[in-house]
Every structure is written in C-alpha cells, then in structure tokens.
Figure 1 (cartoon, rainbow over the protein chains, first blue to last red):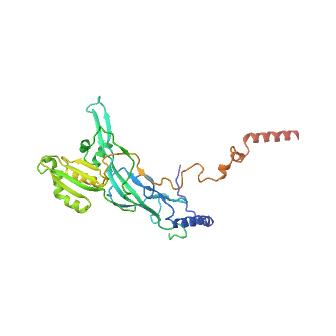
Figure 2 (cartoon, chains in turn cyan, yellow):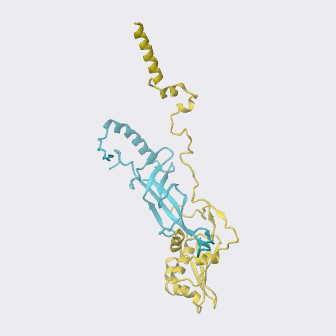
Figure 3 (cartoon, chains in turn red, green):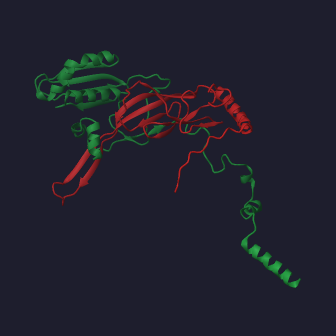
Length: 158
Length: 198
C-alpha cells in the first residue's frame, strides 16, 4: 500500500545557513536603493497571474466591484524582482515584505460578441443568436515597493 | 448555458441590438489612456456632461422618470464633476447622452428600461473613458516590457558551456563513467584465458 507519511522537521544545518546568509545580506543591500531600480511583480488577479511593473495597465474581463478612482492593494504577490535579484514566494510572499498597489481607471464593456447556433432539423430549434458584451475593468499599477528586509533572515524581526 | 449566465450578470441585453450597428466593423485598439490618467494614484473622471432626455407622459420613460425623482440628486451630489441636464421632450423615447473629455460622445436609448437598468446604464457611462465600442487586442499595456532582459537558453548558466566546442570529450565521458557490460564480459573472458593457461 502507498502510505503517505509526513516528513519529519529537520533542524537547519547551521553551516549551510551561514553560507546562505551572505546571499540574503546582498539582496537586503540591493533592496535599499529602490528608487534606482525598477521592480516587477507577479500578482494574481481573479484566477489569473499577471506580470506587472509600475505605470502599466492590466485588464480584467469580469465583473469587479470597485468603481473608478478606487485604490487597490494586491495581496497575492507571487514574485518580486529587480534587474539584479528575484524573490520568489511559496506560494505567495509575506504582505509585510512587499506592497503592490493599483487604481481602477475604467470600467467598460467589450465589443458586441455573438454566438450563432443553427439547427433547422431539430424540433423548436431554428437559428439562434446570442448577443452579449463582457464587462471590462482597467487597473493601473501605481507602485511596487519592498517594505523591509527579507523575512527569515537575521535582519528581519520574524 | 454560459450565455444564459452571462445574460443574468450583465444587464439589459435588449438594448445591445438597438445601438450596435452590425454593418460596420468595430475598430481594434490597444489599451490607452488620456494624459497618463491614474499614474501616482491620481484620477480624473472622464465624463463631463450627461444629458437625460425624457418624456413626462409616455409609458416608455417610466423608469427614467423614477430615477430622476429618486436618485438624481444623490448622484449629482456624489459626482460634482459631472454636469447633468434633464431635457423633457414630449412623446419621444428617453435617451442618455454622455460627453467626455476626449470629445467623444455616447448615446444610449432607455426606452422601456427599469429604474435599476437606467441606474446601471448611467453608471456605465460614468465609468467609461469615451470610446463607444472597440475590439480589445491585448489585455495589458506596458511601457517597460522586460526588466531582467529577454530570456535566452544561456541565461543563468555557467559561462564555460558557451565557450566549449562541441562535441566535447569531457561531457561525453561523463555519460558512461562506469564499465559497460561488453567491457566486463571481455575482461572475464581474458581472465578465464589466463586461468586456463596457468
């Protein structure tokens, strides 16, 4: 039989941790000069993952409750990176570490789309056509910033 | 079934026929904004003027009349940057016309619409940017497409892989580090030979 066992918690190898700590310190130094380097992030918006940077627009093809001019903070941030480093969450990053904010610019409807269905032989089914317009929301990403040092390092509190 | 579900979500379907012309091809566009709207969390509402044409007598404009009686003042108070005109027209269908900062103009018929439908259409005009209908080519817009550079098969790989001349002997030798079966049999054969001779 296949018995699924929970792996035991292994104590961290201290020697290994010291080696990794140097890398953490490098990344922590890089995060301080946030105004020099442009950051990018991967966020999840309604079952879709998008790669965004500041000042770019994403479109959500669905109903969305916030109206125009509302500021949004994206909680599900999967990845944050700069030109020199990337920080990958498993599966998402700590909300005290990164902040990705956006603003709703526009809520429109898409073009008129049509589904045409033709079945003359069947009873009570002739030619049918459905018309609909999908609701769209345009969201502009205003800022992406790193709030503190990497979680789980010596410099962080946690 | 999905169409039915969509119909429940997005409101009055009957009016799509009335304002969409099937003869013309809808223009295709990428996402764009006027005057970098929204950068730095600064937003300017694009709707400037809203004209509601309504009849006082006919049944076709009962919903618009109700909306004007109940929700117009609250709407005007909530959105002071929009100028609203109510234009009574005798024995004509009701319409809503929105005029935008970009100079575009939208016209939506509201005949036989419910009060909630009228509210929905007016709010949809409020939240738009002015272009009446356009086909969405891409669901995103970026000015800086890549930050870490475009990916190649040699990114984040050791440098000596690129400098090597293939086929490389070191790499191929690693594939068979142990003795092969034929070599083992050959050795056994030679050992047996030696034993026989001795």
